[in-house]
Length: 414
Image: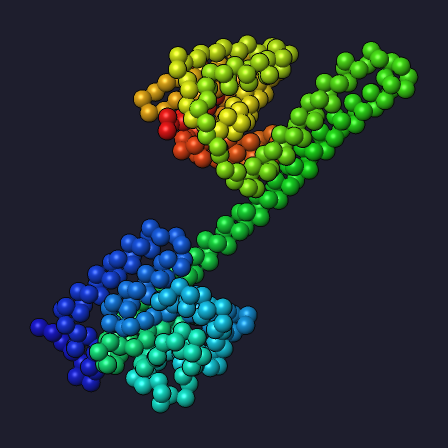
């Protein structure tokens, strides 16, 4: 038995099962989208489309509130792209004007069956869009007492008027849209905060790193000056490696910063990874010998694969340098292998160092994350991952049971 207050006729009394089914299906789709879609414009567009479908409207828009300017601007307007662009650029509606402004100002839904008889109607939007507005349902978007904007439905089809049922359902849609906007802002604020913190850490780390390199250059410069002016040429063999290493460090830092700040297009050509490995080892061998590190190499019979030679060389050099650093000063073994797999060619670099602490293993590819204090910028591995992903491959880091770390690069054959 259904009990109803005789003094209240609820809006649900006139709703059919078909109408409620349409609404439930729309909310279900929006809920799924809100879990999957992170782009705010995409989500709001779909909410506007579902709103049009539910109330059978010709058009819909989402206008957001500029709190500082106290006006509404178009975030989403269904229709032609060029019209959307014009509305976004030209229309900024003070909340003191228009039907949407009144809905925002009064925080109440406004249903106007004939806009020509309403003095609040803002005609500029129609003039820009060349669209004739006949009826309007404007619903404020509010979440936890915070006004976010206005959801506006235009022209009920078949010449009808928006109903009380339409208003109630659109208030629910507007609440969903408001929550989506505020959640997007929270995510963006968090990203901005993390980005600023990362930039601050990077700048500090970069400053320390460059200062240390400059100290090395200054010492080598002083030694070379002494060798030249005082004819103490026996100093040169000791000073020159310091200068050379310092210049190499500056070049590596500059390359990493440029690589991170702009994504360069890769140019694939058939390349023998065995040769890349052999060339890289030949370059790094003196440094490994000085650190007491033995290098073990295992090559594949056929290691030809289309890659950007210079980009893969950068990745390989970075991993080899990191492996040598991991084994310094105690010495150890550095292993490099090229392995053919069913769908990939694997390039593996492993060392016998102390390994990667488990608590930081998930973060080692993050931009600006470094454990090298003043001697690193935290961009080397980030750039390595970006280069491999540009080759549609992947890079995985793990600790070995015997100790040390292993980096595996998987590059597809095509």
